[in-house]
Length: 177
Length: 257
Image 1 (tube, rainbow over the protein chains, first blue to last red):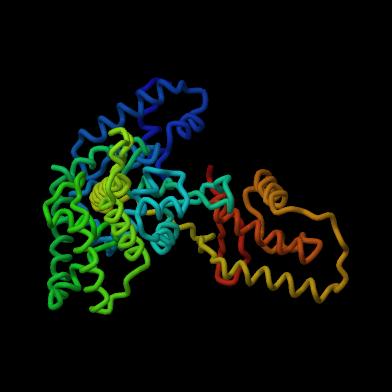
Image 2 (cartoon, rainbow over the protein chains, first blue to last red):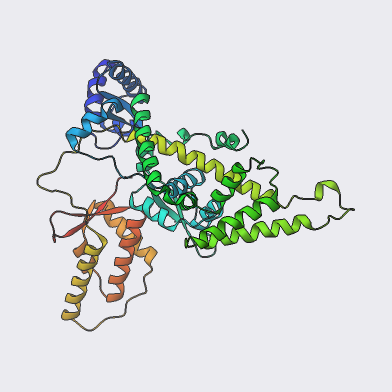
């Protein structure tokens, strides 16, 4: 197939997928097509799609592609869906999540050491909301559970992968400046 | 894109300040509730006193810190243990700094007793900044929507709870008791082996009925082992439960990747 032929097929696949669909998944469905062609087609599709200036956006999220509505129109979409913005995370939960995101995999005692305060309820909230997941046990005495961020974490914060997290060192000078 | 989200953040900020206003009858209380932990309180004091984080006037800051703790106690706010630990640390640093230095010790060997605290404060500060950025990103992300998932009419997915799983477990357990009271000793099986076995079963078929799984057990011990293994697999996000209707059979489904 030519790249031009691939574009509408990829578009339909991204449309129906319930989660961000990865290039690997696309390649598995488009058996026999070269990975390079699929990549070129997807890039071209994204560019065409997003230059249209419509109500939808094709984005790279959590290592895949996803079509979402544009944030400008959230008010109207919410009105239709009658949805409320989801409950905000508390400051304690957000800080705990930040520590886990940057230091993963990490145990609860290690989080305590950094935050200087116990984080048990924050960790429970984060687990309940599936923003973090258990990543096995640390091979030390007591075999404490290790935690890391989940795919839902990437989706929730609009990240394609963990490398898109802002650089921690950038926050260092806040105190001194 | 930025406009919409910044508007939202402002709205939220307005909301927050309203809440603060409502509480402002007792200003002290509001101030104290701001502090997530002892490091937060310390950072606040350092900023308020406009002193350098790298050269904390430890005596002055310790005194202020203790004053805040006293105020908390007076206001009947339970002072968490962490605040007391920090108070002890501050006092310890203060005494260390009062001790005369060994005049013969080489310059580079003298370590400032405040160093570790400064490092902790800087780390804490960084994560606070990161948390703030994460919050802003989440606000922006919450303003986008995806195509709603198609509801599967024939098989509406109801996520089953652990409690419901336990019900099934108990049911099978009770039935087994009724069938036979005799238990035949088997080779001891470990949980790791059981987990591997369930994973293997899920590889050949993506779904297993929880009831069928429990019924395979040859003994109570094995059944308990299966139950615990299933819980472990849920925790590790290897599987999830699905129940097609209330009180229906619980199906154990393998999660993607």
